[in-house]
Amino acid sequence: MPSAESKNQSALVRAASGGDARAFEELFHMHHVGIFNFVLHMVGQVEPAQDLTQATFINAWRALPRLKKSEAFVPWLFRIARNLARDYIAQRKEHELAAGNIANLAALRSDPRDDPAQQTLTEEQSAAVHEAIAKLPAHHREVVLLHHIEGLPVDEVAEALGVPRGTVLSRLARAREALRRSLAPLVEEE
Amino acid sequence: MRCEDAQPLLAHLAAGALDEPLRAELERHIRQCGKCRREYRALLRVGELLERATPLAPPRDLWPEVAAQLTPHRPRRAPLVPRLALPRWALAAALAVLLALGGFGLWVGHKAAAPPIAHALDEDAPYFVRWNAEAHLASAFSDHAAWSLVLEAVPEPPRERQS
Image 1 (cartoon, chains in turn cyan, purple):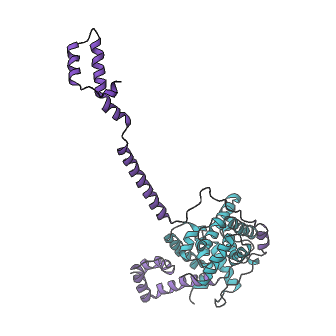
Image 2 (cartoon, rainbow over the protein chains, first blue to last red):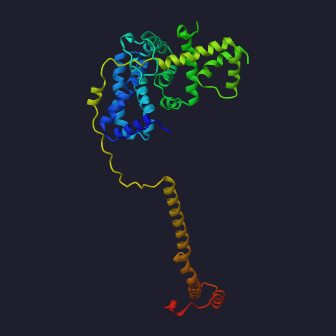
């Protein structure tokens, strides 16, 4: 059964699809940090990531009337972001920059999680996690960001990336192995 | 299960990527093996770290520039043929019935109205045969005896035909 939050989101998507800019603004505030994180980890630079985040929402607004299922909004939105980021990387030939370091990462403030009960990491731990994610190969980075950071279910990650569910699970396992090595000081028992 | 078989599968178990019965077998091994248990816990902790990591916020407010570009959606052009509010199966069934009725109609029509040329040939055949025999009898080079036999054999057409 869909949650109240997803019902509310579906209602917002339908309203925005009908031209309601206020509903779209709510959707923007619900998802722009997630989209920014996703494209930031793909392109590795803050300024282009911000521009790509904006372009994602502008493209989404234009294409919304053609979105058939309002429940598919989130994976669809990430798919737009991914395509834009890939085009950007192909044009700029800067994909090497994305793998390994995010410029000005330290200058970025963290966006607190919605759930106050969730115990968050310190700034240093969080930065270490983001740096470890940035070092992953692109196809592993995508699944980690969408599933673990954005909280998309495996099926929605598969939809966003256009790959089978089994591929997503396998990439998540491989990425976890790599992160376990790079985050060893944070995950090993004393 | 031995440790060297279990170790490569631990990340898959932590990611929820293993199906039964392999999962149960691996879990049984983890319960018995301290080394694999420690490794599995470390892998689970990776997931916890990822879920507790705070996302990075964009430094500037991105909404105003997005809002400035939100042009009203173009109204959809009305379709030339109004769409029927029927499910696809109903449309398919209606089309099948129409095709069946059309086919039946054609068949009945074909039976009821046989080609007029066929009727004409049926009715006029004796007339043509007699006309042909009479024409040959008029010729000096024909076999008059043979054509006379034909005229005797073929009945005379109805009177109105001759006029």
